[in-house]
Image (tube, each protein chain N blue to C red):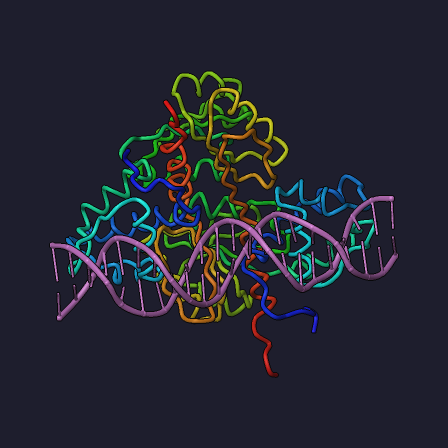
Length: 216
Length: 216
DNA sequence: CGCTGTGAATTATTTCACAGCA
DNA sequence: TGCTGTGAAATAATTCACAGCG
């Protein structure tokens, strides 16, 4: 009902929406009221036609001959990306990465509240990071139940990640952002996004290693 | 010469290579000597035909009727991804995220050595993280020159990222892993990969917000 | 005989180019 | 007139399906 032409949104489109939203937020902060697909697309580094195509999957938010109202488009995309609600998020693993996320000021503005962070390491438990207490790993289940979190972030070592995922899923978590360098096995209906820092660097290294050693 | 069929490798293929490498490494650690495209593909969560197609862009590493020698394939892909060399990497920003990377034990095994971390914050300068000293931001140029780093990681706030990128590029950096929530403007020939944590969560939130509220 | 490597077919994504509305 | 929304075309990526080799 809220998504008109729901004949399946391309995954690639979904992955670009947050980028549009971020630039629109910046424009709004700068006091810009209207923007054309050309200008917006340029700021996000996509082709204007692609931006228009992406938006067209969800509706017609622009005015022909004019462009898009920044406020309107921002709240429309915000709606799509779920920014209207604040999603409770649980972080498993209170190492540097977990703490970086807990401190990440931007998350709240973008629709996420880190409700708890758990760890198995005694020396970390009890600490407070960015206003969030580090709780014992054993309380994970109860935390998920209590907060109703459906989104979780895994920043544990590889060896602990699968078991943590299993426990989260058993409590109703259906979206996982995984930083552990391991391919998680999850049941149908659970969405996983993986960010592997070493892997990102290796992709860059590939390009470095193959930089046009052309004619010469 | 080292890459036979060099008629252009799909970007999607390049992005999967590190994943193959990681699983192969795990297999080698477990003492597995041979693996079929079926088994390997299953572990990485891709279709077997896709794995074979990906490899075929670079050469024929398998034996028909048998499969792949884990050691061989590992070192072939390692070669492609540049793991044979150790790439010096500079980190700009010694916040939690920067420190998480500096401590990341896996990086060295995967072909990267964090040579330095810089920050503008006086209170962070002089600290040592994972054996890496936090140096003053002003020394960035000299560090890049001295180490010959071509790969850098940006973990600064958004407002500082573009300028840091400009400075890095001016010193010869050609690959940037950007964690700042901003679209970097870089000249042709510089590769940027962006990881925006809030954006990753928003992609998950999109899926959560649109979970099949089907018939009912 | 079994599994790789790969043409051919299919599907997904992007771009072109322009009709149509404000 | 100017810029959106979108069919149609082009390109990119994936999968099928099987010939061919060890």
